[in-house]
Image 1 (cartoon, rainbow over the protein chains, first blue to last red):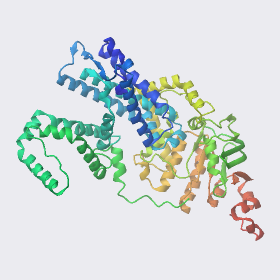
Image 2 (cartoon, rainbow over the protein chains, first blue to last red; image 1 turned 180 degrees about the vertical axis):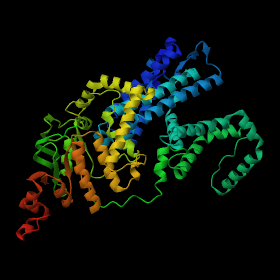
Image 3 (cartoon, helix red, strand yellow; image 1 turned 135 degrees about the vertical axis):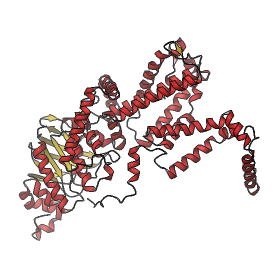
Image 4 (cartoon, helix red, strand yellow; image 1 turned 30 degrees about the vertical axis):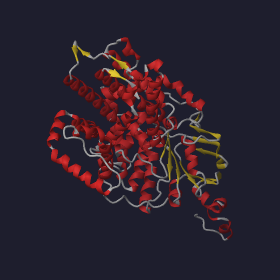
Length: 304
Length: 300
């Protein structure tokens, strides 16, 4: 949600990146707060579904109210950030800039987790009623969670917009939300290193497959392609209908990355869910939780 | 906190057509250990839910040391001094033992200021009331930002508050006999320890009135005896009034100074244990009329 709202009209006015950054964060958290209000009574899965729905609503709103937002034309020529007279322009510079931003966000979230706020959030996740009975103002902390989550989204959105230099609602389809969710689940819920690992795999692997070097490399693996084609042919022969063969040797790497990304996603999700239900790199807490599942259950509970 | 006086005046709770509580009046003087008994479905837990703000009573009023509290949201009532445990243990299962107690101390960790978001008497359900929440909004928002900034920057003040909370948490855990389990996950504790952790977590809110919902449920006689000792010690050391719902008569009769008996949502008797044991209405409620005709046994 934050992604969408942050690069709003101020960019048109030709404002400086460092001015837009806090503004984007502020607007995003404000919108997050507003969206949080109606969903306060919702819990668990329902909340997640409604959140995804909101993302979709905003995207469609941005596209269709083109008198306000320029619709799918989007905003272009977004200025790049200057850092003390040093313009962040090349990919390498951007890389370090983004990594720095990620490190700062990671630091902030880890500090938040080990604080009164973090514990209140966790308590609400565990059992909202009991959290309230322990004195946690659940309304306030849920809204704070919405706002701060959206603030991080806003930060990401501003940086993304400045990097690409162009932004339109089409960049934020439902697919993006689903990708993010998949990253979190595959990496490990509630685990920062897990999420980093998840994004490296789910974002990184398809990109690597698209690199020229990779496709050159794959082009040399003609035997693999031929073998796979043979396999497909064999399956084809025994099943009704016809499935296509792999594309020519020069491009099959990139093609696979594009065509089969979702298949790979799905397969990965299933495999991870079956083999590592807590994610590839679970949080230390989750590990504790699962480690003890093998030990005998605590003393049997007599019916009260 | 100093022990509180609880006054309940004509409390009634109605769910659609079902009357869960009717005309329950009660006075528990400061520092008393008061028992709440009654057959299953008598409305005991509903009574607790009304006191703690989980339910909004349909009729009547509740006063805690003179202050009217019915209809306030749960977190505000907790702040005013009522803490509770749950019949079916409801710990934050995936948090550590120490973290559970730290959540209990939430309002006593002085960071980010207090806030008045939604402390008005009419609370949740209606749309109008939800808009009323917005009244305390600016201040809560400012406090929220301050708290987030404090959590990230961790100035000495926040560090000190956190360290004090951890120290107090360890004290509380030691007091209920959970020393050395601080970093275990709550869900991995044995059953009896989970009950004790629930009590420690409730004590962490610094209550003046502690509501224990079947603290010895599922315990064997030795564990139950230990629990009785713990309940007495809590009253003395933490200076709280205690109301407990209990089914094990040995426990109720042993630890309570006064007992209230509920049946079908109505108060049918009140008095010291010895009198309750002989009260024919109570015996009837538990055992039926024939028990009395046959000169039924005193202890139900």
